[in-house]
Image (cartoon, rainbow, N blue to C red; front, side):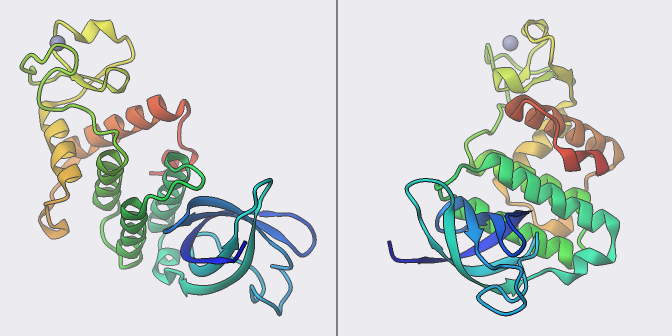
Length: 242
Ligand SMILES: [Zn+2]
């Protein structure tokens, strides 16, 4: 098969031998891909001394019917040097990489989500506030990948929500007082925090005019964490450092 060119964000790297690496890539055109980069760690050659986690490359990939795809070329396009200036920005970037890896499937392209992930890393690189940038990223993931929970009325019976509904990722959103007890894993979240989640998912609010104050911020963080825990069946490793 002929090599396919695509831009790709490096999610993770594993040593394969003394000279080769396996790269887990989130590509724009092919979705998530596991590619073998033969000779990647040699100083000369197609990979110029090795790939970097969190950087974007223009790559060429040959799809294999069995086993790993073959990465035949990679030239760096962007590497976000500003992330290394602060531990908080770096942690937020690792959270983006981990979530992107968990929410994507191999060879299932999600170009809109790919673009959001890159834009998020660019904002973090420029020093934009990490909590707001991540909330926007997580809300965009919900809407672009078809996970958006119901936040306007009860996800089970459609009734009007109280001021502090139960948030139930398992049943697809907020629950009214009568339905809440049906999910022991649901957690109370203010209607205001859920409205903010929905507005963030619409993507209509400019970053500068977003104000996620302390309480709403804490509730949003708890709601997203509960959502990802329910969807993935485990906590995100990088979520501990947020
Ligand atoms: Zn209900």
